[in-house]
Length: 199
Image 1 (cartoon, rainbow, N blue to C red):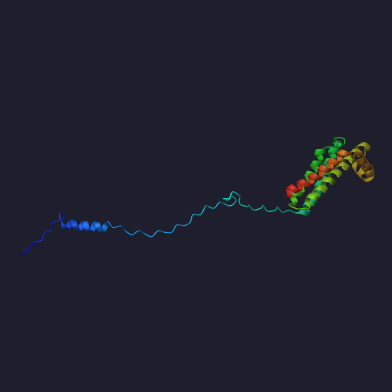
Image 2 (cartoon, rainbow, N blue to C red):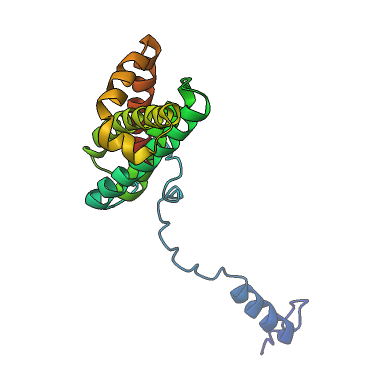
């Protein structure tokens, strides 16, 4: 007697194959290997900006300005003579009255020429001080010579050739305690302006 086995599963055979395939498809796919992460680096600040510690990055010093010391001294001497002539003319115009800012202007004008033309130099400020003193002295002598020529009713060349002793004696009598301050202003103006503009 043969016994026939019947498929009692409520799911048809075709559907059972689909379920089998569905079970296989539901298996997780192997994940791709992860790349190692780079360590976090802080952003770099631009050159000259404050560093993370709060201190600014060091800046490069400005290049030293070059000049010609010899040409500066030559032009400084010419400026001294011109400034002395202007100071003497002002001195005659005010009848020998001393003007403090005029003495300072003599030294500052000489220092400006030395500093602009000569550039950075350790010796030029000293030259500026000396020329400032010389400019004030020559300006006073020139002003007294102009006044002497006017009083004696003679020309300036005649005063320069025959009455220099009289002019020098008059200059000594002209000097007063306040003139020490004027000479200090002229020397300091030549020194400081030369040093400032030359650097």
